[in-house]
Image (cartoon, rainbow, N blue to C red):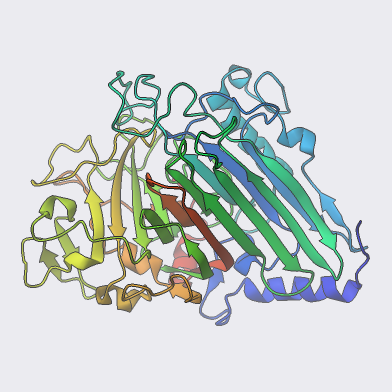
Length: 495
């Protein structure tokens, strides 16, 4: 039942959103790059996407679920009721069912259909704004199982060949299935609390271990007050030991991190290093065990090895990621004895270069793992190559750990910062740090413009040997642009 609320609450909320759009430190210093600054807008926009190991759908195997894309988008009307933009019939659309704007080539292709469905959901949820409209926060769920005998996932963007099982988890036929998805559309509860959720499981039959994988995202907010609080829960099972769950702010158009097609999202302004920051509140309730690579922030983009922007050619496009892992159980694989797990050099805040063989000065403990793109031609040995199958094109990862060297950027400086029992509101100089991280580029080519098209918070429980549970909340999420970035880049389009 919808309860009528005072119009004053609606007006206060609109005023709060207008103020927060300039950043809480004032309009003279920051403006927001997201459509919903600080998650304070009563009219929520949130969507859901699920993937198999190689960021595709493969098959819509969950009965009655349709394509694994859905949205919960609404406005708070003047009579204090919720006006929803997406029906449950639309959320259940799957291959073979047409909708406005659907490319006929995608009608019976589960991978292409999901892409088109995201664009359609975006059109229903779109909010006009400057410099461009925006769509929704994105809940991303991913299954790490890979049936290596299927050759379903490309290898560094090229068609792959089958190989023997064992390298990746897979219980047999169907291990790459899509999950069941259940949705409670947001409603106004007693006292003016708005609440809704997505949840479900990958275990579509009876689990051999007696437990089921589970994911859940609940969003809740008091009308006219504060931030939306997104509460997440992720549980692995024997059949699904490698699961990922993130809350993402993606580009409103162009290629978000990890994708090779047009996406929809919350970032209405391009983010080019170094002039942007991220503010968010994170409260980790349960960590997910020692294999939980929990990302305080994970940023993604795409450029080619010669520095040119990505154009959708999966053979030459490279996904680039930087990830700060805050689980204190995560070790530094980078060490003086494992130089191949380290970037070739580290760049200090004052732009001093420290090479990885400088054992007295290189901050080995600041890096969990670095891996290079598998199609790079001029790699410096020793080197670790990134997994060639888990993205539609080759990828490069720079995975960071809490360390004093990151203090200048507002990142955690020691193990345990921001972990269970230590909730914090962070202001991270993400753009500044991202401008100084090592990323591979072919010798003699023009340095790439580092334009980041997605960022997320959440965990990747990496092949646990027992059932693990992670729980956390995210609120107050904002991306802040400095005046220099606003004046020069506000009209720039995404890659």
